[in-house]
Image (tube, rainbow, N blue to C red; front, side):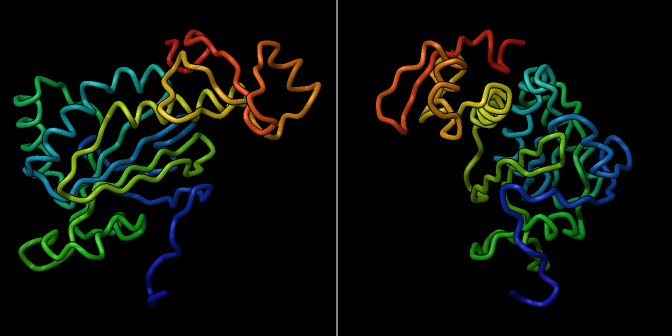
Length: 229
């Protein structure tokens, strides 16, 4: 590992703390998290087309995250002053009302701390040749633990519904000791966690269907998931 480069972040890592200026004022990141879940997501630059569509979509979906006890916070490699003008464009284009804070990371300090830098795409740089942030997503729980890391290339916009689905999977899994299968959405059957064995599993999940000893489905109505808000 190159000198001065932070240790890579992995699932289960405590999210590094930092202080930063945002469009909602200065923050201490761990204080910002508090006892909530947080989705931290980065953007290459202000006034870029894909980022503009993304922030508008996140702004529109923010009430659904809020119902689930999730805070949104964006990051872009520009100044707070630049962010302010850009937010006006975002709201105008998308018909949104963007309320969540956007971190000003002109010096790429947070981007480097969270390894939000593209190693290969030589086009994803500013006028000075400094690498822009890529489209990273970090889902962080109230214990400040990183639960999900997503990285998209600069050319590809994210799927806000998928980010919300991940939150529902994590929160529902934590509450009910289940995991979620491929393409799961709230209301679909879930999988009984492998750590729950025999009689305990049968008692906890009386409607459990054993497909294989290692694959046990059980119904879980949407009303019992984190989407029931």
